[in-house]
Image (cartoon, rainbow, N blue to C red):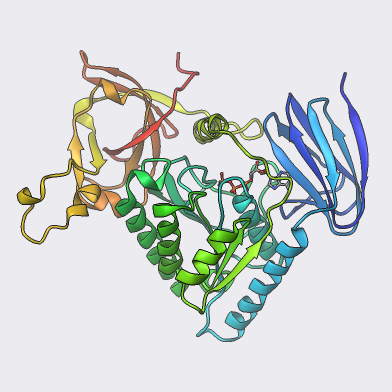
Length: 419
Ligand code: ATP
């Protein structure tokens, strides 16, 4: 039987909903409320699918109706939303200075912390609040494992000028995407750092020519890998983007280490995580990565996409791989760094090992070093390989390949709608 619950929320409280079965439909009946910074429209019904986890927060009190027997919900008045609002207010001060004096730029803030502390959620809240003030910030996502902008294995940026849709998130239809090709920076640290620098450079160029972006500033989401080399990636990213503030969520040691290692002009803030954030197992993370790829090709229940499957001949495509076998030092040409093999682009022959592999579509005309630094045109998945006929069957969002150079990733996706 469908369960209908009407809940009255007091000011500064939130209703946390985890959808365990079926779906949950949420409606704002009275007052004002928001989900991760996006305001709810009164009497509009919002549907959340199984696996969703959201918080409906109100600053001034609201009545919410929740329909759905699989929705596990509770109210909490222990929320860090006011702290996040204060962070937003501090960013707004920097924007005002940039607005009145073109020699200044808007804020550059990086969110760091272990996995599942709400980094992506806080980025979304800060972006939404800035849009509500009429700003156009840039959201950068360096989380190659659970990023929100494109498929796993990528880092990228979006230029935001409208609030995130409550159910769909931010409009990612025109993102800037770099292919890293794996779900953890540890798989190729030199490549990760190189792409971070490249992205930072492109963002700087955008800010130099677009005043709204320059004032709106840059909000950076990062990976939850905060130890050892992962920590070093965070320090390198802070440097590359020249951030002036870092918010550390829930990790005192990380806060102290960054205070020690980042320049003194960088403001480092330690903030609590919300008790509502969900801790996800390894399996849940793998499922959510697969769902992200599924969404890239098939869309969502509210905005479905119809991908294409077609065959291509081995001879019609060129497959590039970033990272070559490491040569012994004695074989390296004079002046070549040992690390260079990690960022060397080489050609590979199509073979049956490509089945279920995600490939990035590069705009390059040939397999060259440019494959690394050029933003990608999209992704395909190899559904089948036929060595006999020398053909690959691809799942593609586009009707035909916009380029013949495809870049290998270590990411797999089983297209279960492949007949
Ligand atoms: P990762 O490092 O894996 O990318 P993260 O630190 O970015 O994780 P989020 O993805 O922001 O964490 O949050 C984890 C989960 O918790 C998400 O499903 C998010 O919707 C949920 N969540 C965040 N804040 C709340 C809240 N206040 N109430 C309920 N759920 C929440």
